[in-house]
Length: 348
Image 1 (tube, rainbow, N blue to C red):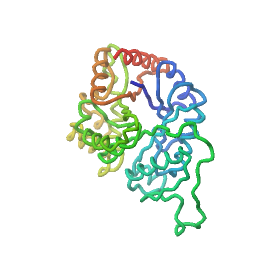
Image 2: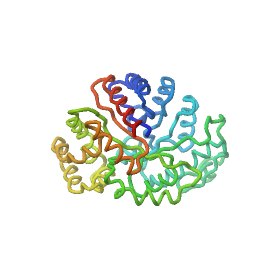
Image 3: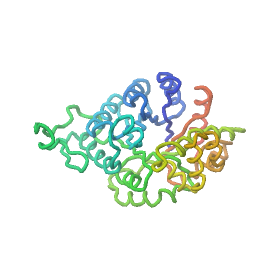
Image 4: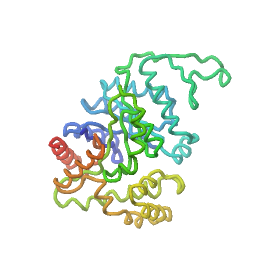
């Protein structure tokens, strides 16, 4: 199992990258670089490429609406070149509040758009002249929609790789099926080993049935917070604020993908309660309503034997790589947790 984590630069961007350098030495394999509506991810990815030697540098995620497909391909090819072949292009739809509220772009047809973007990116990396007549992207632009001067072009540079891995952060049935069919990696949210088959099994099977047999198997990233040791169980509560935010307040009441997944994972009543409380401004009560059982199943927190059992459960459910956050009040403590996890994973 590869070990990945999300770059968090709340305490300072350069400090966060310095910590990634230390985590790489401790066994970290992949860093996901977020964007949301903060600093852009590609700037950070280039900086990480210069500071690290081995880890995969993945956008986690680049929203598909804020860049053209060709620019997404160019960006990935550039980071891949700077990092000597360590880039992974993470794509996702984000949500309407960010896309329409921050970027001012209509949030429309995310699954179909990602499908076309993947096709266009791989065309760019193969240095083919880009010609795509899709429902959402037409390249070159048809003459009746512009000056009529557009012509098919291919990337000037020769990419280091002509097939850069693509990860997709997807949740809904159609998007997960598309991910299993076309992508190289899947980044789910609110994943628990026990509920995975019920929530996503049918969609994954449908997508894999359509997958090109020449492509490697889909890499699946999941895991949760890591705190390995005695007396660590109270640290599970640290996940309550973010879980309540996503389940209760991420998106509108009628369109919250995370709430839907939580409900499908066996917590339908709790999902509604958490959303009601959060949207009413009772955030602490929403946090308290998150079941202890869910917090235990969605993390790697506890004594070594418990964490080992959770790792086996994740692997049995189809997880091939870990996506974790590392508990600790300092870089040294988080590096120590990464080392413990690396040693434990290597014994499975």
